[in-house]
Length: 227
Image 1 (cartoon, helix red, strand yellow):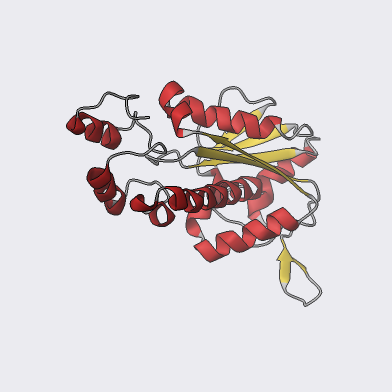
Image 2 (spheres, rainbow, N blue to C red):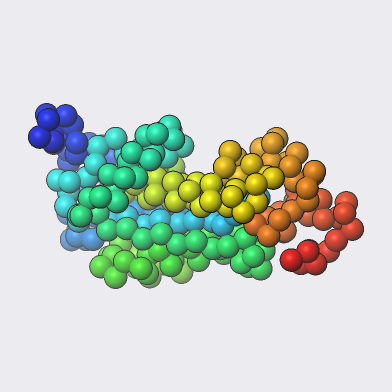
């Protein structure tokens, strides 16, 4: 790893295994290869968020990147700040709302968010995608199962998508304080289910999701009647 002025490891080395996929792409001539990932696909409230990240300087990739699920909240936020502050990092974030998820389904919404994030980076030449193949991307792509633990650029995208969405849900809690969005971030936790049963759905809930549909049925509403 490269070190900062204090001698601490600040940047990844090209020998780091997390850069193996990026290095292969760089050697193939893709100078602007990026990683893309999403957050919030399994939630029953709030948007699905996608982020795309390109490292334009292989000597200035922040150390400590990993699958966002393997990092603490503090680690994710610290890495978020480092990624956003690093001039050589190109990134874009896209959101697809709960209403749109209900309209076109979560898979198409995830693809839409990823495509919009990718299209916001005009220099992008190739994409490493976490998980399954994605339709509608603007450039060639390669999918990596559990890619956020295999690719530095996907790991960075997972961190930006996750932290961006978490911050959105913390703000949402101010508008809808009954539901505890600042705690569970819209995921299907015991607390969230209890609040949903107690208060019914709010405009941030995905009405097409089974737990929300069940509450609508029990309250005698059809999907789309509440808001």
